[in-house]
Image (tube, rainbow, N blue to C red; front, side, top):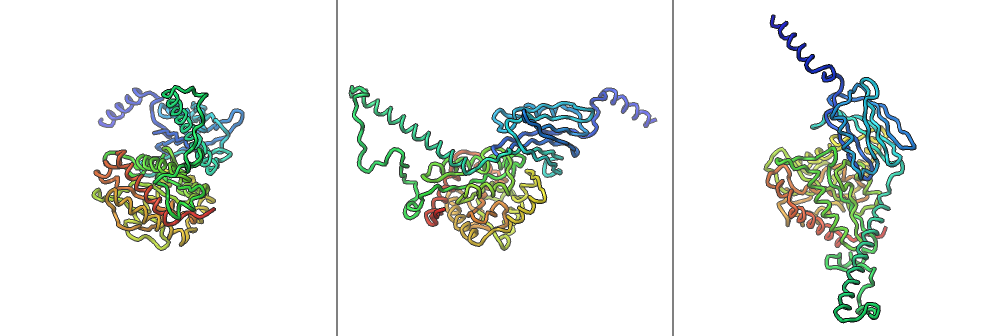
Amino acid sequence: MKRRHFLHRTSSLVLLLGASDIAFGAAIVAVRVWPAPDYTRVTLESDTPLQARHFVTGQPDRLVVDIDGLELSPTLREIVGKVRADDPYIAGVRVGQNQPRVVRLVIDLKQPIEPQVFTLAPVADYQHRLVFDLYPTVPIDPLMALIREKEEAERRAQAALDDALGEFIDRIGRSSGVAPEARAPVAAAPGTPPPHAPVTRRSELDGTARGRMNRLVIVALDPGHGGEDPGAIGPAGTREKDVVLAIARRLRDRINAEPNMRAMMTRDADFFVPLRQRVEKARRVQADLFISIHADAFTNPNARGASVYALSERGATSEAARWIANKENAADVVGGVNVKHNDAQVLRALMDMSTTAQINDSLKLGSAVLGHIGKVGRLHKPRVEQAGFAVLKAPDIPSILVETAFISNREEEQKLRTAAYQDQLAEALMNGIRRYFEKNPPLAR
């Protein structure tokens, strides 16, 4: 009797929901679009694995994706509104039920692309993910982009200086009653640098370093995590990827204000960059330094203080260093990397290319930075620690990883959220960079 009553109630529920509301096959739980200068990532997250076929068309450029075992849903339709107007690769997205249990996704493109389509198994807070990475057929040259950015910044600065000088001369002319066209050119005082020469400031590197800083010095800044990978999350919900990006931007502005120096960001917005690509970006611009910025987390909420790490060839200098390195090296698993056989070989080769000279220079850089960070806040360890961080594996670039504070500590999380503390950290890092170059001037390329 009870069984018949249960079956009656169940059948009534099925009739009430209707056939279109009964869940079968895969269900989309989230859609995300991550635009970036290097590539745009589209992620479909579902409760079961998705199978898809895709092809690319030209004139106009489109990526067409057919996803099996799927019914069109309101969550999937949200992808249409996820595309930003400034996305460098995607002009728009259309989605529809192409066949029974086959959804077609049409991505209209702004330029030809080479898509990478792959799936990711559940990890951390994510369920099954189907990922589309849209790379340009002609990759961006990061060094040329950096040089053009520097030239454009100098052009804007010179134009602003010319405007200010013209306004100052006009103001003098109006006060003296002399017509602008009748004014004699203002003679430069002895020793005044020409208009296009960089003005030497007190913050400029001095001594031997200044004499040898006769080329563009590039500092690669690597804000950790990003995009699909939020990094550590503090008790108040602060995401590591947001805090470290803010600090890196403040440090970038300070570096770019220095004569003959330029910062290259491995990411300058909220998108994911695989660990290997972060190293490759730094090497492609022939960076002089590599600084990866993070905000630590630990199982003990009372852990606090900043740390600086360099690479180790002989294992970690402490259990904490090993734990942190393993956690940071897992970023690729959470962020999502298309691991092919060849990619795995390249990654293994890169991991083995570390050199003693690079590690020695990294320790010098780490000591210089650690000394100035210690003036801002508490240090977790009074010395530079070492461990096998994948992101520090560039064999020819002094590289350090800075854990600015413990985001898992409620008090330090609150400090990390403030602009004032972010400024203090950026200034400490800048002072450490200056100190390093004072003792280790960059050589000619």
